Length: 242
Image (cartoon, rainbow, N blue to C red):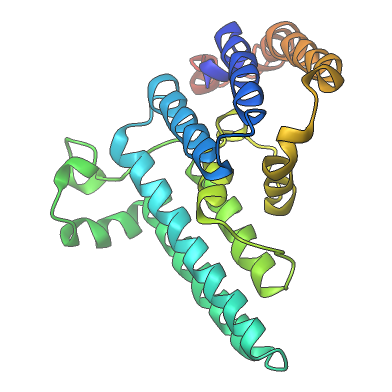
């Protein structure tokens, strides 16, 4: 997506880091309030700068809460019946099948055709040929991978704790929403919990270096490699791609 290869992305990302860092250091603001502000910021950026519409973000957030509820259930079962290893696996399997089933609706036309008559709001689907109605939006695959990780880690007993608000921010984290890398929930939650104890000056040089390296790779190296690789492929479809 062009947004992630533009100067605007890096400027917005850097501004967001500064804003969140200073907000997180305000000790009189509860952590859940800070997380609400972070979620609002993530959703605002995704809505305005990536082309996602409101109902698409709503679907992703709803699926994230669904995965979080399943993970919570699995954690409760593991805690209540520590000797029973079958129940968490069965619950995990049911959750994984459900989440992947939803992904199939967004990715495969036959699955979308089965679901389309059941939904009362045709606005969810592309207009035009009814045989090609499909909810199409970017970012759903990586979001689903994060949801699956939460559920599977819960079944494996790897989650120390699970906060729905943290899970929503984990899924909606805008810098890695489109193409990763896929984070681990425990690492993300730890960073959220202890960010107020970090000094910005300790992390700023490393962060600026990584931003500069990303600018060089996305704005200088990748366009050059794109031109020399695609131009030698005699395929009219590839030649028309931007």
